[in-house]
Amino acid sequence: MLVWSEVLSALDAAGRCVLVSILDVAGSSPREAGARMVVRPDMSFKGTIGGGRLEYDLLHEAVSMMKRGQTAFVSQSYALGPDLGQCCGGRVQVALEQFDLNYRGRAQDFSAQEVLGNFSTIANICSSKSLERQVLSPAMCDPNSAEIVLNQGKLTERFGQDRPHLYLFGAGHVGKALVHVLAPLGFQVSWIDERREIFPEYVPSNIRCIHLHEPQVIVKNLEPGNYILVMTHDHKRDHAIVDAAVRRTDMAYIGLIGSATKRARTLKRFKDSGLSEAHSKQLVCPVGITEIRSKKPSDIAISIAAQLLVVKDQQMSAAKGGFRFAS
Image (cartoon, rainbow, N blue to C red; front, side):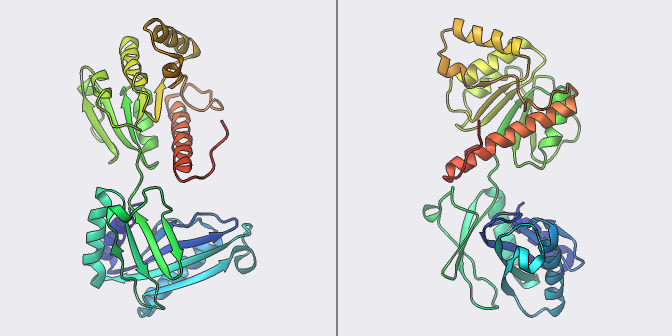
């Protein structure tokens, strides 16, 4: 969620809102530190801190806070089991921060920065006063740090979204289903096909349609760490794209839709062209999680999206020194 965009939208619509943030977690909890929701006076909200009784109570507390209109910031600690009767046995520290139209200019500045990419702020927590966030210079920011860190009364926050870039080659039935499945999942998607007329008139906001006759050419100029997924209507074109991709050795994911037979034929062509086993091992084919065997386009799309999420989570966990999923 783009936090400040939601804050700005709420201020424009309702004149005030409350930002609810999980500051710290000990033990088991529904969401991690950094989870947030933006609550409006009518109790409508965007985002989630995990649902359940904790979220229910804090929605009501946020609305009460806006009705009182005085306190700008409050931090509370909850033992999820004893205090709220939730099955999670952990403890969470939560902040409620109220904004009104006096904060709109600051929210607008943060919103503009958020759209451009990640940025970090630091602020001192002082009783009930609103936070005076100072934007940190890029040199002082760790891109792999936690989204929110509370340490000795200082709150460091990272805003923006880590959006992996997926280059999706092919706008057939599965491609059309996949772009809608991916819409809320935090991927920026470049959707490429040589057939301009095949793209739908409307696509989700994270999708950019590209009409290109020789799509394999774009692969050579991609930034490292991107995701490539190939499902065109032409097997020769499929091979040209994945061949260009595996020769790079620096992509996060290279997927090719197809059967085990297609995989075997593709790997043989790699070998015949002199590519090493290390290059060939990068190819994921068939794509999608094995537990879903349906051949319906919508089901295949969900299967592929699930696999992409696993890869994304593994890479984020590795970057932050956390766990990795079992392979």
